Image (tube, rainbow, N blue to C red; front, side):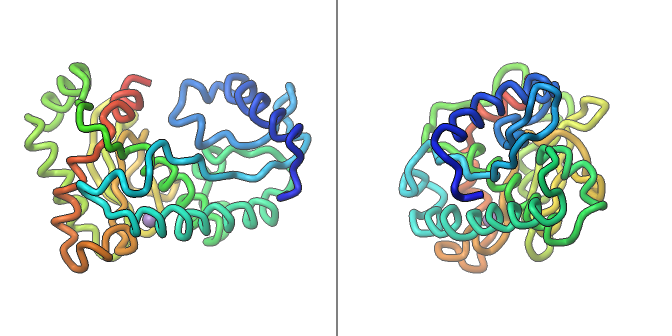
Length: 249
Ligand code: MN3
């Protein structure tokens, strides 16, 4: 699968867009992450193409307000790259040449192996996390999002406190999330390991709007045991434009 030609890559990109529209995924969360396979017009796969990491839209050293260059580099090129590679292995062995989006897999993750669960989750979560970050300090929650935050949490400060508590109190490795549940309410929670709110096995279920990686590999070089300091600096690099976009979808 690594021998894909340039031509099939081009087709892949074009077909992926068509497939996302055909499958109605354009209306769901993060189509750029979840639809990563070549699909014919009838929705059936003609050839498997691997999931891949989207290039970062910023440099490894541009988030120094919160995350140091070395951590970003190792996190993206080693940890996240490994989830992606292992997801492709699991896909080949458990799905084969049939077409499944990452969303399809996460949604029915209980049918798959732990390898699929860890790596499908790991790939989705990291691809989303990179987009939750930005060196641009001008971004803000939109008026619509702020209104909803005030409605569901009382205030932006309360929201931040609750999110921080969720991230701090996640025992061991995992993720903190802001999600929109199926009733449309904003909810804060956390998931263990590489689980996420799109998985059928997750207690926290809904559409993810914002996530924070609280595995030690995400912060240990700079913060060591001080996870709380990492979380408090996270607020300086949140890409609110991305969160606003997820909320409006
Ligand atoms: Mn990580």
